[in-house]
Amino acid sequence: MLCFNLNNAYLYSMTTITIQVPDALEKEHDETVRLIAAKLYEAGKLSLSQAAEMCGMKKWDFAEILINFGVNYLDPSVEADLDHA
Image (tube, rainbow, N blue to C red; front, top):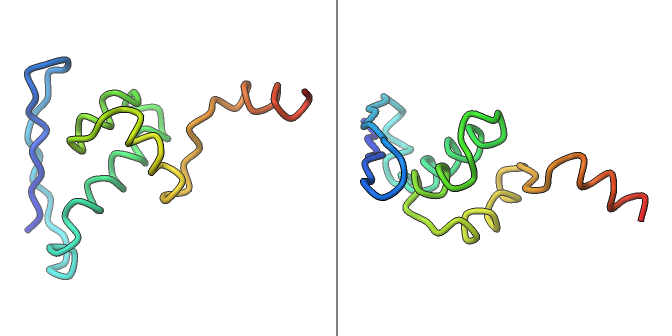
């Protein structure tokens, strides 16, 4: 069973969620939490700050790992502007 704690009294009200995953992911706890946070960020369910906090990371460190999960940090409208610059 993989558990991750989302408690942090600094910025956001968070809760603890327990999910069942294959035992093979037990060794990949941190990576699994990062993947979930990245995908929740991508879906617009979490802000960058919330996703980073969920992983126990600083916002800019989390932004740097988004590429590992195929998640784009830049807003699509910003990307379009950059492509036409």
